Image 1 (cartoon, rainbow, N blue to C red):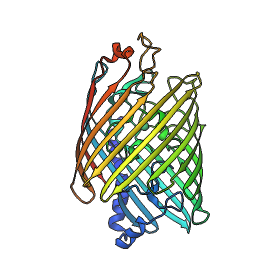
Image 2 (cartoon, rainbow, N blue to C red):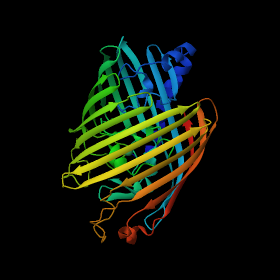
Image 3 (cartoon, rainbow, N blue to C red):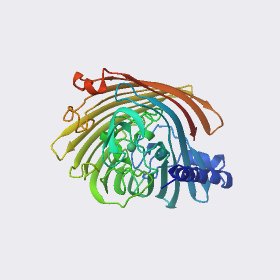
Length: 425
Ligand SMILES: [Cu+2]
């Protein structure tokens, strides 16, 4: 693909255009809008704000902003975001780069008969135009830029097509349902809601270091999930393609449904969402094709409104057990507080165990780095119209790690990002 930026731009705007068109050409009056706010989920007979990326759940109280429109029996929703970011990562392995990140997401839903709901959803990323290395992010590791070397201290770009999926659910009674979800690509039933959709994470332009322990399977090249919703509980299982996306970020590859995942979600009250999940991932890494991974995750998300203010927090643990016998853990605690509807403070604390940072030439090749990272940031949003906001923000990150890795990373540095973002919702 010679012009991923152009393709991405066209695809992104088409996705946003569908609900906008429906908004202006449909019969989406205030009464319809009131009906949509009280709409049940695509996967079950609960209120739709519980639903997040893939088939994941978030607390029922989570605020859902987006463009909405109706056309016949179809309900369209869309939102999008573009972030212009400058990342300055400290220390000898740090780097600097300005880049554009962002995504758009759109869905179309209708009831086929009463209690049976069909949803089509697409999610597109601007990331491929960043270049194959993505952007500098100290201690990030995972995937590859060239098919030869592990990508270290950089966050890989996400694929142009992050989700092209459909789901169908059948309500069994007023609380329970069964559903099927299929995507190429799509998100299997593992981990918490993917970070770009988590209320506690979405204000930060940084990808969590724990991404490859928790939610990195969110772009699986083929997934089928079936699930059972019993009121506040959900049990689901997936078969999916284990191999992570390769360095060609505008391609969709043929599915190999060679991996399995199972997850239990529990939303005990409107504020909490808890999950545990496990996955057997066949040959996830292109560079280490003989290694399989068993992944375990557990997470708790607490979202709470205080008048017009919103506080969102997630704690998560992820473990990779590799078929080589090695095992690595990651811990994450992140929180965001939005006050006055325009200002958000956000922070994230992480501890990760990383084995891929040092190449064969390094004397530290066998060393597992175990950095701690703390990021704190702030963003101020200015509403431009009812649907569009312009935000300006910054964050700073500090680290703590063993002296053993200082020959490569130097004394713990500071890193920073500044960003300008446009949100359409
Ligand atoms: Cu990702």
